[in-house]
Length: 308
Image 1 (cartoon, helix red, strand yellow):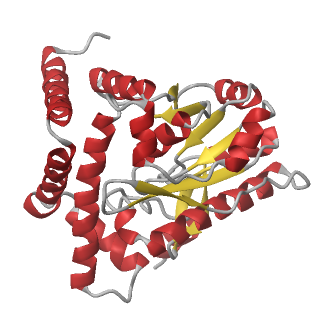
Image 2 (tube, helix red, strand yellow; image 1 turned 30 degrees about the vertical axis):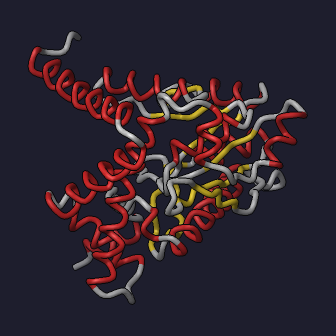
């Protein structure tokens, strides 16, 4: 069905804004566009109050001992960092391989390189922590065949722009709506598939502990790893004050091939959530608190709410 004129006009305006922002990042010196990104993030958080209540509710639940001033400080830092990360994403469209490596000089991928040299693939799990897009680009710049699973945006023109930037940075894009076969085929062919499983999953998810609450979590990453018998590598980026990032390696996870799929998938999903939680608790301003990660509640909680 052909979209209506109003929708196409809205899409065009959104893409024009993105392209204008991309142009600013291209022409401004790096200190200037970083300051611009932090300013836009501050404007979104403090000026417009974007999802301010969601952020505060999430922080209060995850860190009940923090007072309101401490929560506001974390939220403000998160918004500034988010704006700067957006600028870094647009910079990926013009950075060379050496420039990407210079911005992420420390990234422990020795285990992944060993698998690559053996012609074997694996799952790379990260989360909405730090600059996850730059993480994929940094791994690709080091010679890893990185395939990122990305959801298709409602605006097809913006979706195409984002994917061109990813591909320009050395990443190949797998649509999240693709069949399981494509992901399985990629790993079996020696590719590394990067996925972000820390999203609310109201349907076919599993509930695991994350930051003190049960969180509905996608099963996909663990299902792929169990069926393929391949490890899951957890990697995250920590921003440093000079515009560079350091990798945060976490323990490598292995699916239990001696268990049936359901319990093995649950245990692996729980372990992935624990890896991410450790990073979030150590660096809470790096996490994307604006998304409603705990929106879907377990059946037992829903049942209690309906009890007389």
